[in-house]
Structures are given as structure tokens and as C-alpha cells.
Length: 180
Image (cartoon, rainbow, N blue to C red; front, side, top):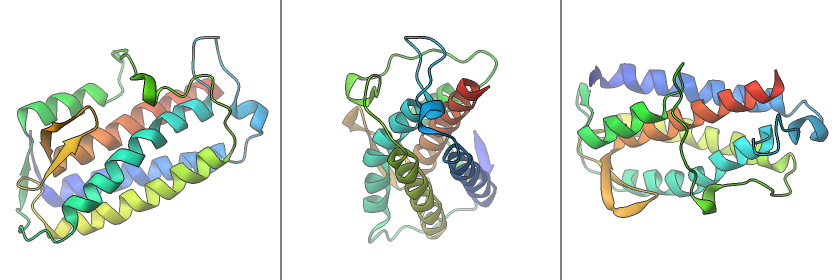
């Protein structure tokens, strides 16, 4: 996938802003509504968001570290890597959402959760928006980040943003379905 860098970053910023707005809407619901499940093996709204928080706790510091003292220069076009594009496309929600097994450490099922989950997520989205802005000054192609499942696998920064934000999109939509 090739896309002008500015368009990619603008699209990702819009999604992250939408995720923050949706979490603020969830925050207006009662704790009972936020912990409601559609079935015993499904996730509640808070479990969906807590799952995202756990990934955010890895990826936000990782991205921030890669942006720190980064001397690369931005290009006008982002060209996705093979693996990065595969992971990003896999995360996108759609008509044929592929069910994925969640790592035990990232599975919030059965956790005692309250509205602090939403506050953390909103704070993470604010941080994501800041990182997206900072990334306009570096190469999204040459800057690499480790991924949560293995420090040995590196993705282009642009792909990492896509994976994390599309993953957020997937589970914010899931949380929305729980409420409908």
C-alpha cells in the first residue's frame, strides 16, 4: 500500500479522535451498562476498552522512544511493509471480521473494571494524537518499532500506527455493538 504521508497521518488522527469521542460517550453510561455482556463468553464495553489499554501500555512508550532523538526526515509517501500491511489489514473491522485468539496477558475477561478504564483510554488517545503530530517530522518508512509479541520483529512506524489504531477501531466498534 502506498499513500501520501500527510493523508495517512490525517486519517489516523481522525480515527484516534473518534475513538476518544466514543470513549467519552461510554463514560456517560452507568457502571452496570458498561459491565453488561451480551453472552457469558463475550466482552463488556469496559473489557473491550481495557484490552486496548493493555496494548496501548506497550505501544505508546515504544512509539515515543522511537520518536525521541530521531534524525530521519519525513518522506512525501508512506509505503507499507509486507508484514506491517498484513497485520494492519487483519485488524481492520469489516463485514468478515476474523476472530483472533487474545494473548492471556491481554485478555481482560473477568477483571473487576470501573470507569478508570475509560479515563486511561482517553488519556492514551490524547497521547496517540500527540505522537501522530510528532511523527510528521520523521520518516514513517525508516523509523522501526518492535511489536508486542516479539521484540525481534520490527514494523515501519507508519504500519505500527495503522496496526494500533485499526485494532482500536475494531474493539471500539465491538464495544458499540455491546451497547446496541
